[in-house]
Amino acid sequence: MRDDDVAAAQELMVAAFADLDRRLHQPPAPPGDPAGGHVRLRRLLATDPGGCWVGEDAGGLAGVGIGILRDGLWGLSLLVVRPDLQSAGIGSALLARTLEYGAGARGGIVLASPDPRALRAYARAGFTLHPSLTATGVPRNPMACADVRPFESADHDLAAAVDGAVRGAPHGADLDALAAGGNELLTLPGRGYAAHLAGTVKMIAAFDDEAAAALLRSVFARMPAGKEADVSWLTGAQQWAIDVAVAARLELRFGGAVCLRGDVGPFRPYLPGGAYL
Image (tube, rainbow, N blue to C red; front, side):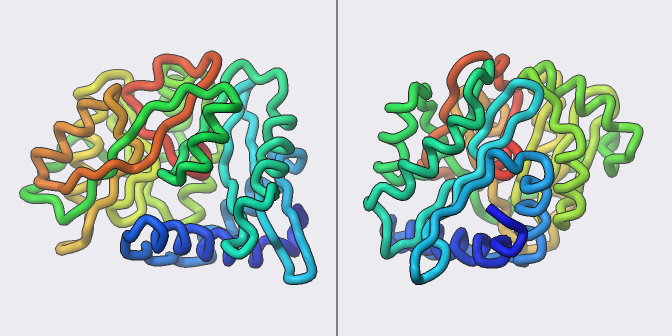
């Protein structure tokens, strides 16, 4: 992948996920601001050039696969194929390249859509699949935690400690990239942090369930009035988040799987994000 692929890669990602929504008979998600996606892709090209791959044909980009490595922890940040070329082997080839980039990693993370082909591929690659829920809707009576405040530069040490406890590797400057992409970062001093984009949760990590739940409730309280929340990757290990979603009267639906292999820590209390896992 090269820098001049970034815009086309972002467009392909939007098209592929819109196609998946149609196949699953779901309303397509809003595409969002492409500028945030460009920040993400350029960040990963800078940090993980060996993990960023594209396939192309006469029509342009045919697929994009991006794997990232952080302190021995591998993650699949993106795997999409142009809708007219799916099931032709391009996704398998791109997945193989990204997995090669993570060869020797102590653990791996994939956040899988409900696409049956994707779930099969990750199971065959040795991942354990943990079915997950998504929670959406306008939160009822959100109550912020008074101790939650905006994330500051000095909070990076706390975030690194929390990340080490829940997943075994820090996100580091990936958190700054989230902020640069328009996300708001919050912290509960000494206990955890969260990232969200107007109620779409990108990440929550904490030392304990109570702190993680307080951060999620605070995200809901900071949303624009009438805006729908979107919380993904709610496995059975994240009952604290399911409880908050139920209390907020959000709708729960099945939403794919969190796929893990090797040493990824306890992976709780933790809601990962698709870009930086």
